Image 1 (cartoon, one colour):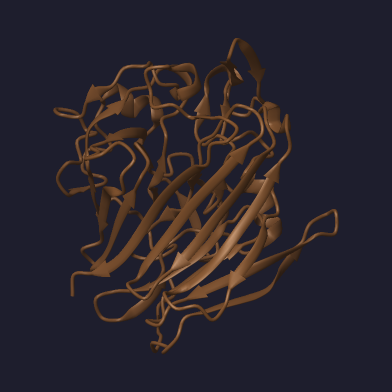
Image 2 (cartoon, rainbow, N blue to C red):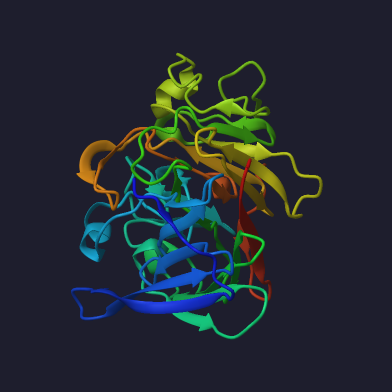
Length: 366
């Protein structure tokens, strides 16, 4: 883990540099958002991938708190969605199919018999058009846009998506999603950053604390597909209604944990109003004093404890990544919603504009 002193700057900024070239010759760029307090968020035009979020600890020492890889080739070869924009449909769709208005659509199979995160050529593998916003007050901002043609990955409709990354001087990183379609379709977007509040490559997050504002979750069966039930977290290792060390119950023989090899579940958020922006989760690292609060308009959040990282590759930290090297905070609609009419709808029809907001707020206890 590399920590360094960084003097605050007096203005926000957006910068850009080359990051690599794809086999077809397209250039991928790395963009950096910096606020007036010296916090930076770096991301790629490829997949909208967030490669770094550099924030201070209680003593003012900066560290990158997300996992990443060192090159474009590594991201293409074996990234488990580090930092990526995920779509058209985040999370799993059972048997890689769904029915919409009586027609069945077949999706790519890439997770057992199921389709995961939009398939092998989802949003995380696309080159997004990035337009930085210069000279504006209120922080550093960039607009990412992508058009997914009708039928791509089996999904109906030409889908036009714009994602806005904003880093403000209140130390909040905001992600706004907008999408329109010319045919009825289903969508589910998220950002798949892997967080370690002690710093990228610093070891296990087991002693970091998590609070989730959810009284219930969606239990899963084979292949981690939701059963359709919504069960209470009370009395289970999924009860994070109070700040609790992530690793406190990780070895509990609770069937849901055994099935997922750890936490990899969707929590049903307590929402004061269905589509309102509300607090979803808080993470806290007692050692560094770093605090991360997550607000979202989404109805669910998927927490994943990097269960499938096995030390088989090294990250941008210069160390290998293993289980509990990080956790995700994937704000989203529920997995497999197109096959569960009782879940909040993920359908988008022509004439509608889909809008969703998630805000990551950084602070310390010092």
